[in-house]
Length: 449
Image (cartoon, rainbow, N blue to C red; front, side, top):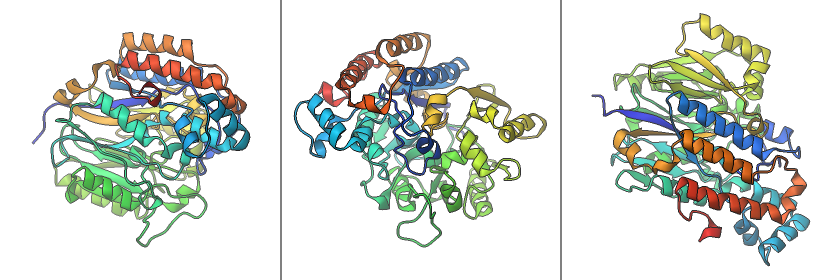
């Protein structure tokens, strides 16, 4: 039986004022290849903001998630730097620039890693569940989850409708990278669905593992999140990502696959025992009366290397209000001849994708994050949508406010050496203090408390 009307909302992360290229993410090819280059935080923030506005204009539910406080003075103090804030930054710059870089990372802009979200149609208690990702594999990301939980709590504050868990324990055995390794399938967003968890390795079980780059998501973490969210066994599928594609730079599943409603769009080398994965998804969805289509891209059409360099699969697959399915891809897909040819061929094939839209997200892409990285998907019914903090929804007025806010507070050039500038901390805090007023978040940052 179909549930009440529901929507899939995308909550995009605003790029923070300290957006820079420190090359902190081993296994992320783009991040490491652009290490130490000069970033443009203002351009990065505006590129992301314009993506949000365009999708809102097209009729999609589009929300905004705030950046975290960076540089993180808390992290620097926790590792032994003392004195006033300026002294902490100066000493860290002299003695441990790598820790200052970690403390200054604006990686929380990629909100696909913010949390895993299960809609109320799937959960045992009928609430929307959020589990912030512990991101235990990387220091610069492992410091995010407490602040992320605070921000989610300010936006999804109604405890009768929303349950925000604490992150899993921050150990590699329970390494959790959030919605970048999670997809949900359902006939309609408000229907009961099947949640698809993809992991890189099992910490305690047997099975293949990557040899070059680390597997950041464990089966144990995925199963723990499913238990926390009250998901039944017949509504979950757990699949292992192919170790060889992790070694090729596919550090999250959303670099090799994306799903929406009844469609999985993926590369033929995405998963271990790939056709068994399709069969299990199809069987469990069939029990719900839901069809399933796997749109598989062959290696002969687009290689894994081309997929990684273009971020073809780090796209958003969205259903418009008229039922058409849109694929949102970065400009880099048009600059890769083989990927562009594949996208052009979609018009002549019988596929679930009706239209391809291209966005310029160059600043984010240089750090290894495409359209899908920038958004957290949250399915909401009408009552749940009404319970969300109304000031975070993208519209003409909010766009104008945020565009002017970026102009007031963001630099158009940020080199690695600039992280040592104590003025950057003051600028960032001034920006975030004003942002909490614009978005009606209250005192969510440490410096405000």
